[in-house]
Structure formats: C-alpha cells, structure tokens
Image (cartoon, rainbow, N blue to C red; front, side, top):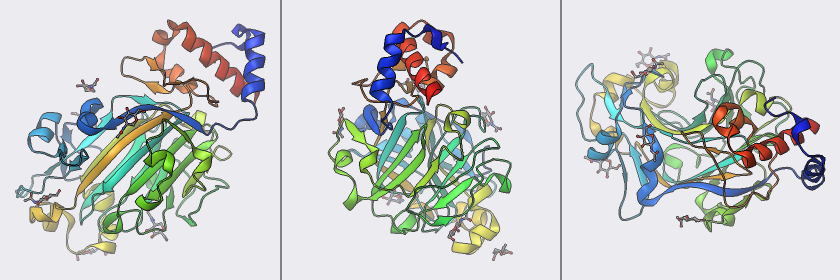
Length: 377
Ligand SMILES: *[C@@H]1O[C@H](CO)[C@@H](O)[C@H](O)[C@H]1NC(C)=O
Ligand SMILES: *[C@@H]1O[C@H](CO)[C@@H](O)[C@H](O)[C@H]1NC(C)=O
Ligand SMILES: *[C@@H]1O[C@H](CO)[C@@H](O)[C@H](O)[C@H]1NC(C)=O
Ligand SMILES: *[C@@H]1O[C@H](CO)[C@@H](O)[C@H](O)[C@H]1NC(C)=O
Ligand SMILES: *[C@@H]1O[C@H](CO)[C@@H](O)[C@H](O)[C@H]1NC(C)=O
Ligand SMILES: *[C@@H]1O[C@H](CO)[C@@H](O)[C@H](O)[C@H]1NC(C)=O
C-alpha cells in the first residue's frame, strides 16, 4: 500500500467512516468536457498504420486529419466528426486513411464517461469503437462501451483483462451474454461480452443517443439511452450526476466476479475506426452481414462505401467522484466539489503517479482517507 493507515489522524479517519460508509458512490461531478471548437484539443492522433488489429487502415496524424477533414468540428452544429476517408480511390496493396484518437488524460476508478452521439460509423469492412484502456494492456484492463463490425445492428460491450476477472451475477437489462470470462487468454481474447438487444444501439438503426460508462470500485456499468430518453441530468448539462437515477444498466460487471481495483488502472478514452482486420475482416463474421471480400471489394472499391463511416459527437464528458483525472504531467486535477462520497477514487491514480503526487499533501491526504476507507470495507 502506498500510504500507511497509521499516518491518518484518527479523527479524520472516523469522520470518513461515519460520513461515507453507508453511501455507494453514485454521485459524480463534471471534471472534463470535450466539446465544440476545442473538442480535439486534448487527444493524441495515433499517426501510424493499424499495427494493433491488422486493419487495412492508416490512422493519420493530427495534421493530416485536419487538412483532409477526417477529424473536424462542424461549424454549423459544433459537433465533432471523426471519419474514414470517403473521397480517395485506394490502390491495391494500399490502406485507407482513418482516425484513432486517445485522450491525453487518464481517468481513475471513480469516473463516469458519457458521450452524446448523433451518428455512428457503419458499412461493410467498417469496425468502429468507443472504448478505453490502460497503457500497458492487458495490465490495467480495457472497457469497450461501443463496438461492432460491418452491417451488424447490435452494440457489443466487453471487458478485457488479465486472467481472473469474470462477469458474475450482473444487474443488467440485456439477456444476450456471449461470454463471461474477461481474460485476454480465453476465447482468443474475445472478452466478457454483453450484446445490447436494441437495433438502435449500433449501425444503420442508430438514431442518436448517449452512452454512459461507470468505472467504479463496485463494478463497471454501461447505459445506452436513445436520444428521446437521455436522462435530464445529461441533456441539461448538469454539473452533477447520480448514476443510481439512471435505471438498470444494459451491461454490468460487478466487483464480486472481478476485483475492479485489481484488474483495472486509469483508463485513456479512445475513438477509432479501422477497416477489416482481426474482427471485421474475419471471413466467417464478415459473411454474416456482408458479401464479397472485405479488402478487395470495399477498402479498395468505391470510396462512397464509406459515406456512413463517421462518428458525429455532441460531446464527451467525464464525471468524477473525487480526484480521478490524471493529466500527462501526472497532476491529479480536482473537479468543482470534493464532497461526494468516492469509494476509492484516486487510489489507482496514486499508484501510477509515483513521486510527483507525493509533493501534493492535500491530495495525499485524500488518497490516504480513501485508502483507509477501502481497507475497512
Ligand atoms: C496531447 O498530446 C499530444 C501528443 O502527446 C500533444 O501534442 C498535445 O499537445 C497534447 N494536448 C494537450 C492539450 O496537452
Ligand atoms: C505500432 O507502431 C508504432 C509506431 O511505429 C510503435 O511505436 C508501436 O510499438 C507499434 N505497436 C505494435 C503493437 O507493433
Ligand atoms: C452475441 O450474441 C448475440 C445474440 O445471440 C449475437 O447476435 C452476436 O453475434 C454474438 N456476438 C458475438 C461476438 O459472438
Ligand atoms: C456544460 O457545462 C459546463 C460547465 O459545467 C460548461 O463548461 C460547458 O461549456 C457546457 N457545455 C455545453 C455544451 O453547454
Ligand atoms: C465468405 O465468403 C467468401 C466470398 O463469398 C468465401 O470465399 C468464403 O469461403 C466465405 N467464408 C466463410 C467462412 O463462409
Ligand atoms: C463523404 O461522406 C460525407 C459524410 O461524412 C458526405 O457528406 C459526403 O457527401 C461523402 N462523399 C464525398 C465525396 O465527400
């Protein structure tokens, strides 16, 4: 443990226990927003071909994405567009340009991220995802909120971890459970997948809506709200949300089957769209919803195949139950108020931050307080 519990003054410790003990952490304060003209300011463009999932795609640099208008903010709507090149005829053996962006900041346990989407990418060969991971995958885990391939119509949600994390006794609305072992070593790294039964959740049937991902020590949960049923706390841009008011999540991985603090570390958020590759290009999966050959008939075929291969994003907001935002320089930034009951927020962050954080006594105090809290309960 980073901080010994003996360093916590007894009075502070008792205060922590009495005021936070009965509260499950469901209240979060707005800590970070990506929206409008500054949407792309705090992301890193991958700037390399897809050497991660063998896609026939080049994830372009920020400069190319901007000049080719593959990542831009639409001036009439203020929405961010993240897209595949749909204007270039690609030569045989070449790959098509597209985008993968990763948030510069990481978000520790005790965070909720929300994205408001107006359009999601689809089409034969197209493999989009909105997800997160820790930098040293599989250590620190991966949370896939939105993913699917080709002309599929249902969103697939999944965790990927080191061996030992399973989905057990979830409280979730979906009954489509594909797999419950999250280990990257099981089922060819399929993850523990829950599929959303709604055809409004992915692809052509998607009509807009918000995805909410809660990364809490009690478990990981995902909600999908079609635009007409987005909770008012989200649609009104409230600076505080309470996930206990959001109803049953569509997918849930409680800490009973997976010790969240053990298998997950601060997550970086990612939007990407790749083409073919290990998932979309798998011929048996490809044939389920598309005909022909993934690369030959689509990637190097008519660029108009990619007219629908774009994300249109209203915003990404990250809410925090404590000090869970970790910037690249290692500073833990504090959202508006620090009074909500975070169950263990900051402890993962502290582990990664090392020496730098020790120079900030108030933060160390908070971490100590929360660590003591975890330790007791
Ligand atoms: C985000 O990271 C990229 C690459 O590391 C860097 O170029 C950019 O300046 C960073 N943005 C901010 C706002 O720190
Ligand atoms: C992918 O390419 C980048 C840039 O060359 C490199 O830093 C990274 O290690 C590569 N990743 C893999 C998994 O090969
Ligand atoms: C998961 O199950 C659903 C429902 O049976 C199915 O449509 C989907 O293709 C499955 N996904 C995977 C990745 O096996
Ligand atoms: C949402 O509210 C935050 C302050 O709480 C503000 O910074 C942001 O601009 C607002 N976003 C929109 C889209 O109005
Ligand atoms: C998928 O379709 C292609 C082209 O029609 C065919 O060559 C291939 O054998 C099919 N693969 C599977 C697994 O059905
Ligand atoms: C490319 O896709 C966009 C939508 O993302 C569409 O507006 C445009 O007409 C498409 N075609 C060309 C040639 O740009």
